[in-house]
Length: 373
Image (tube, rainbow, N blue to C red):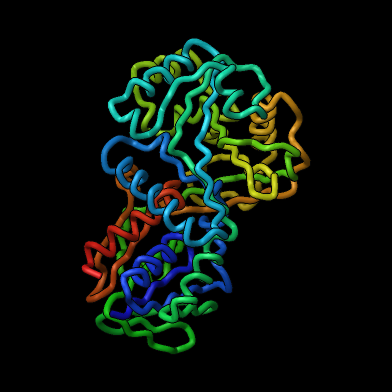
């Protein structure tokens, strides 16, 4: 079988991985010299903790298994089974964490409500003021800026993989065939369009009423911390954002402890993870209304800096990078991904939202199974 994958981000690359692993030949086409979108502009977190129960959690847990397995084969991914801690500071936040730890699927997530002392035993860098923390053992991390590079290097070594950068696919020209902007036609037994947040052009022509929206975020990265941040870290605002935390306790938190105005205005939460060079990736914001701003705003950065420093009990290192990114999210946010046959032999796979990095290996595995690769 010959598979054509359109899109060089993590979802497309994981589809290429699944096809090559099953013995097939793959041609992967990317319109940029390298993928430049949400697959690089994220935390690199394999984020199980906040996923909705049911299909979303099952997908994340399967993806977590696949990431660990692939990470053992491709050390350059930097897979690290570090878990996460969400410190809580008052009775309302504690009640939400307690409710999460009592979920029927808490054991599958590795949830445990720990004391502040226990949290500092897990992550000694957390020297700030908090009373307890929700520990999630199943969370993990990889290096987002280089993951696709290392995956492609391993794919090339099989002799069954070709990467074609700098080509934009413009047209479906037959069953399992597409034409790029160089005029070249690429034919296969199956085509997977994993075009990320690129929802115009060919995608719009194929699916005019695609139930997927674009979401913009802001993030930043520091110079090396100078010590190990041994887990990912979130704040209690993440309880408001992730579906796993829905409960009467969360309703009470939202009613009795509104978000700070800047956090509410930008749909913010703190997520923080350490890179292999020691720097911290920190964010993030969410912007849903078009047209998106073209600039980055300082107020959200100041807010998230203050929250991060309050948990660390020390100033952050110098900020080295700030950036904005855009990802594609199903408008029905309970859906893990939008997977649709759009032409004979051509499938569109898009809209995982903020789950893309976490769930991409399992999303690709499901595509491969459903298409009978």
